[in-house]
Length: 113
Image 1 (spheres, helix red, strand yellow):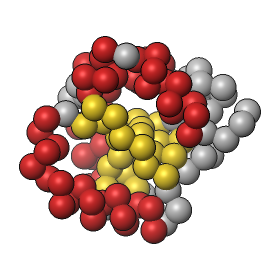
Image 2 (tube, rainbow, N blue to C red):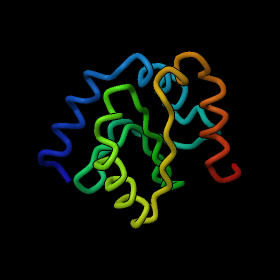
Image 3 (cartoon, helix red, strand yellow):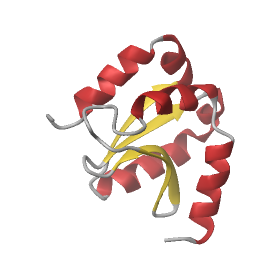
Image 4 (tube, rainbow, N blue to C red):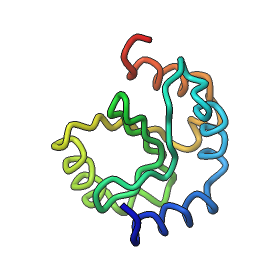
């Protein structure tokens, strides 16, 4: 893969938000029923926040800054879904105020263990 996508992914990992760090602390090292997640994973020309390849599940976090890019987000989501990925989204403040609820919702989107 390499190239620009992986460089961008590395930069994004280093500048992750509080919400991303909080959620990553709950998803990393196969903590969620043994499912392996990666963060800031390049897929095609996009970099997704969290990705479980086994379940083809993408978890995206939105802060206020994403509101401007609604049309771009819709195109990106369509492109990913057309390739068989399932995308679920959460607001950063939901991750920070209700981390357990967000983790439960992600677990509900994964196949049975």
